[in-house]
Length: 624
Image (cartoon, rainbow, N blue to C red; front, side, top):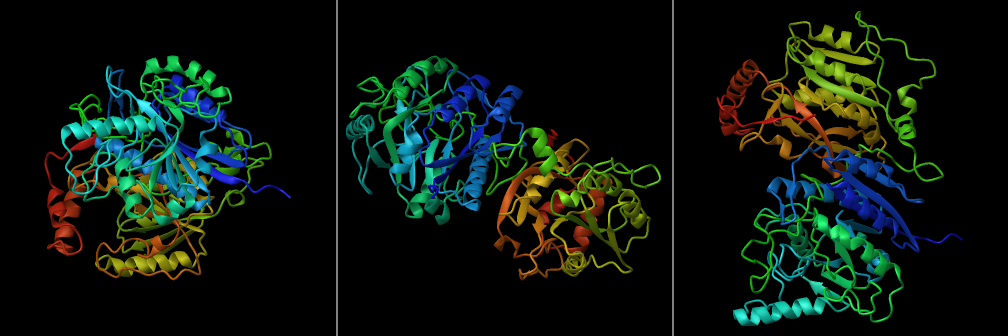
């Protein structure tokens, strides 16, 4: 009878230098996993191709490695003095961590182990944390946040980073705060398990905690800096206590110079620790065997997991001797944005008997091959000999659109892109008076096309139009429905990665960020134009047994039924480009239409309507 193993998903958002990342990955390979089935979920947010290659080559025997590209190209500044974070980076990381929570939940893992990629772990860390039976527990590490300051742990008791105990309503003197601060640090140098108010960077989360609703989403009425604080406050509100373990402190490679400590840390932690070994930051373990080796000289800090928020004046240290640099929240390790569940642009997915498919095997098994290009006369080129039909490799994908007088806009461009990955199309021609329908037939030649024409446009009642569109799609027995407008097209990598999303059995709805382009190479970003900071549903698995409900408002009713979020859903970092605002004449047309159909902003946002004609909007360059 086979042993039932504890299933653990180890997740890490990674924006890291290759020399540090290599040590981190080697540390994961050294983890003891007796009785544990350990899989990995990495989000590759690297700017260095050497770091991305290290992740692609990481293939522990007996484990699945879920490798996802972040889709971001953010600059992250760090040096030997400190690390510099901004709000966008913080909430990007939060989104990545939420994706990991979503995957752990969807695939039924017993635990999620979130760890930053500049940490080096003691081999016994994971086994020990699981053995504590705590729903949320971090392993301690100690960091010198700025040169010349004391080592501090990544955990705290209350507020931003206050490391002393206090009762509600109590007002201790500064001298008493100093005493409690040093008592807190001294306590954490002793091997034990201690309840704390905040933690991060090296955290084990149980399935029970995940099911209770923990997440890294921003709590809107709290101004604390950093996603870890919002995670911890939400957990406390849910009644889940937070703990730190100090038996096996990790080594934090906060500065490049900390790489010099790795060899000694490995030497000390490889030996079997003696009972009662020390773990404080000063001695690195009384017996020299490693129970506290990570803390000793860790000069390390937090990576991607916004430990967050300390200030140059020493916020969080009782006496101003420590604290983090102004605006800093950790290391670049994480990358992230809004989020919730999981995107699937995988590089590899375990499947074969020996553990992992090669990149070529993954491409063959999980990605739909690009369709044959159309010849100039609109006929499809014959498939190469031996090519399997797309339906043999993954579920059917049905594109659906509503179009009207699109011949001089973007229709040809977007359909040429969509035909690379769709299997069928359902298009409502809502009263066109040009050759829009002919373009649909020409570009989609060779792909089953259901083209329905409305002699009289229904656009003045969008709900009626969208429900007609839905009914026509359902008639085709769809599996997955991709609902787009005629001026929307995904970034290039969507054609490569869509097959993987369609294979996701645990998810029925994927949401994406939509970028409003203001010219060919820039999207708009300001108070009125920030759709790309949230996720919207565009890709839905059709469930015949599900009772779909529609919003019947005449405008802005949504292109899919309003109750679809009752279905299992995930977020994807594949990005969608909205081209409809990218020409001045199109913006004027939309402005006039909105002011005609909704002059008081009853169904939309009047101030946004008025901002359409701004002469100097804030534009951001698009990077493919």
